[in-house]
Image (spheres, rainbow, N blue to C red):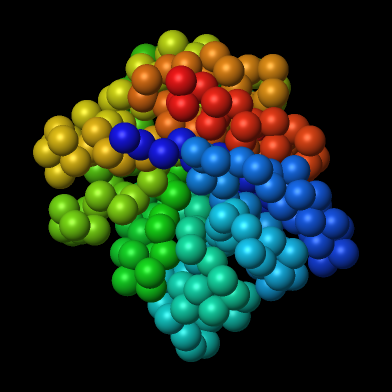
Length: 269
Ligand code: PGA
């Protein structure tokens, strides 16, 4: 049985004081929650205070990115050991905003990424996360133009396979995937639940090719992109969607707590 998961990606929001307040409110709001793994991913600068605010709860801490080396002359970067030393158990890898694939922007503009993540760096980061005892939450998803050209399945499958290059079965089973259609991120335009489920199934089938069908059935596949209290029920009712990777709606404790509670409730039925 897969335990549902709700991940809050705070992105570049909340200074240390704001982060503390939000974390305390989430911890209080989810005090009685059972049956959903909640993960909070604040900016690096707030990891320690958020960890403190959530101490004693079952809420896990995650980073939003990492670099693949463990230390050295890499100005501005953060390594897996640094994240674990702040209490992280998870790390988001290959978010579309880091791959330079933005909202509804045309494909040409999406190539202007200042962060430069691509399939090859995502693979290095997944390996670094796993060797550093972090569970990578790997984001995959198509641009609007790719969907219109009916390339969704090919793009998503390609990203899954590339992220897992050279990894062995025992490592792969720990990886969490998040299907995040780029056009749905931060746009308020959620992917229709049945379609999101179809693509999550494609991800699971690609995983089955690597680890076998039984193991792939145990792996966590999330949906992300304009998840909100208004659409979470329908998403969670889908058999291949195990939870959400949430941006906007995780910045308010009431809405984030509601998402986690609905996930637990629907999957617990
Ligand atoms: P959103 O962001 O919920 O604001 O669309 C999701 C994400 O970027 O992971």
